Length: 112
Image (cartoon, rainbow, N blue to C red; front, side, top):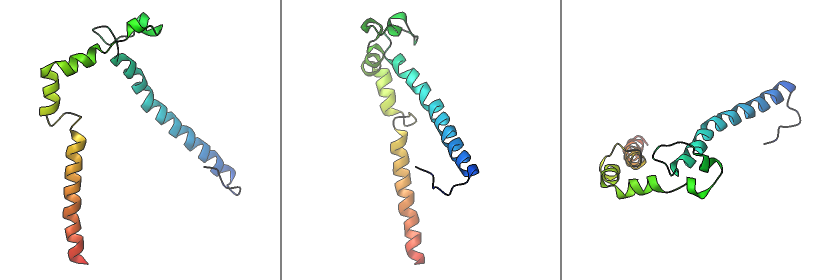
């Protein structure tokens, strides 16, 4: 998004300051995710960066934690049966939002 030619110096400074602030916020929100994702593929029992991972060797990475999650009935059943898990919250929110939107639209039609 380019600034118009008639923008004052203060508006230009604020525009680029705003872009810098937004970029920093985006960086501080995304960077921790970029650190956690490689740890999910760690071959060790604990989430640590091993020397093999830092050298990008295949021995340092595995699907061990994912296999444990999907093959352990306690973990996989908990995700399916517990409505408070993060995987099911968007579904519940969508159902509640749709129902409330429909309910509010009934009142809007009555007033018109």
